[in-house]
Length: 70
Image (cartoon, rainbow, N blue to C red):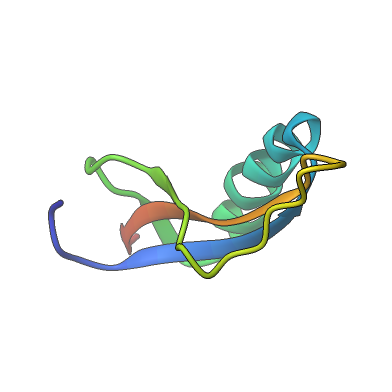
């Protein structure tokens, strides 16, 4: 994975809700942040210590986007 600065948003919820979290980060936060999307890949980070509920399928991850100053 390429180094550099990333913005991260901790997501906790159901699989059907993760697209809303991506939208909040990219559409709502990024335009006013003073940063722009960099050309490196965005990704979801799932740490072994993050929560997962077998009954509800709720999970936790970090949504990470590469950023660079405007």
